[in-house]
Length: 177
Image (cartoon, helix red, strand yellow):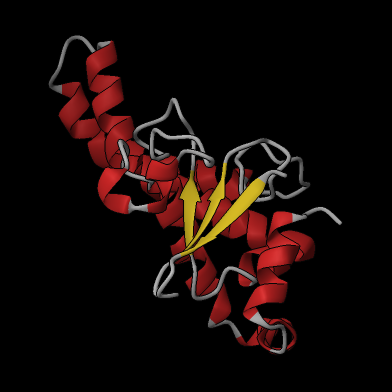
């Protein structure tokens, strides 16, 4: 099981906890999509915007590279995920099944993109006890909402809308079927 769905007792919180590469929400999930031109253009625009600033500096060390990456990484990830889920119907339908839920990257080692906890750790069921920021989960939530609004995916939305919450949770926990 690559995904665990947690539903709070009062049913006000539903977390889709994921981490492994075999999970469709993972960055490492094998899917064929093309984001290179968009990512490349985004990075080129960022580079041009910073060119004047960088020309003033004689050196460009690792800490500066990390600083710049940390400023743009969420936008880069959003664009890459948007392309992935736009182009792959199976991935998109699985993402749509999380509508009304919160995606949570339950990486025990990543406190930036994940929550710093394993999906089976009881602390993963309460965001107040997370040790990380869950940037990937937040990014995927935004991608889902962006795609959910698109007219071209109306039939998929209607299909998913007919599934009960219980069915959606079961399908998420047992992906791929």
